[in-house]
Length: 336
Image 1 (cartoon, one colour):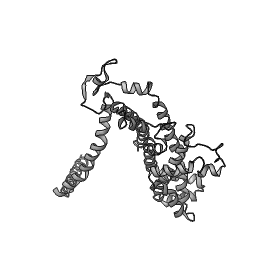
Image 2 (tube, helix red, strand yellow):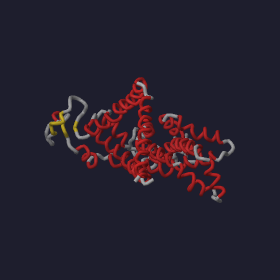
Image 3 (tube, one colour):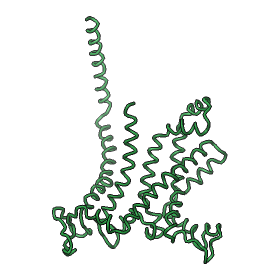
Image 4 (cartoon, one colour):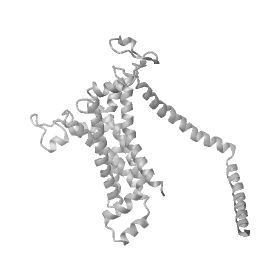
C-alpha cells in the first residue's frame, strides 16, 4: 500500500516537473518569432493555394461546363442537347459530357493517353535504372568521375526546347549524325526519324531519356554520398559481393530517395510537352495529353471546359500511381 502511494506521488512529481518545462518551451517563442514563423509558413501556403490548388479545383469545376472563355459561367443552367443553337450553350453546366466526348468522339484522346503511359513506362523502366547505374559507377570513385558526372549532368542544365533543336540535327534525314553513321542518309534510303509516326515517339523518348537519366543520376549520387560507410564495411566483412551489397544493403537505405525519384519521374513523364511541341506540335504520332490541353484551351478552338476535362484526366493519371505507392510505403512503416 505504501509502495503504491509512493509510486503515485512520484508520478505527480514527474508530471509537475514536466509541466513547467513545456511552459518554458512555449515562452521561448516571442511575439516576433511567432510573427516570423507565421509569415514563413503562411506566405508559401497562400502562394501554393493560389497557384496550385485553386487552379486545380477550378479546372475540375470547369471540366463539367461548356465554356469558351467569353461571358460568364452559369453553373445553375444546364446545357440543352443539340439542336439548340451553340451560341446559347456557353457557360452552362454540361455534366460529364466533356469526358464522354473525349473518350468516344475525340480521335486524339486515346493515342495521347497511350503515349503518356508509354512515356511513363520508359522513364520508370529505362531512364531511372540508367541514371541509378551511372550514379553507382561514379560513386565507386573511378578515375575521371567528375568529368563523367559533368558530362552526364549537362543535358539537365539545357532547356527542353534546346534539347529538341539539338536532336533535330541528330535525326535529320540527309545531314543528321545518326543516318550518316548507319549509312542511311541517301535520298532513297534515308530514315525519317521524326516524320515517321511509327518511329518519332521512340526517337523523342531517346531525347527525353538522355536528359532524365542525368537528373536521376544526380539525385541518386546525393543519396549514395549520405549512406553510412559502416554499412559497406559490415557487408564487406560478411562477404557480400558488389551486387549483394547494393541490392540488400545500400538500396533499402535509399528508400527516401527512391520515393522522391518516383514522384519526380511520374511528374516529368506526364507533363512532357516541350520536346513534342518543338518536333511537330504534338501531332502525327506525338499526341500527348498536355498538348491536347494546350490546343483546346489556348488554341483557336478555345474549348475551356473540354480542355479542363483533359487536364483532369492527366491529373488523375499522375496522382493515382503516386498515391498508391506512398500509401503502400507508409502503411508498411506503421507497425514500427
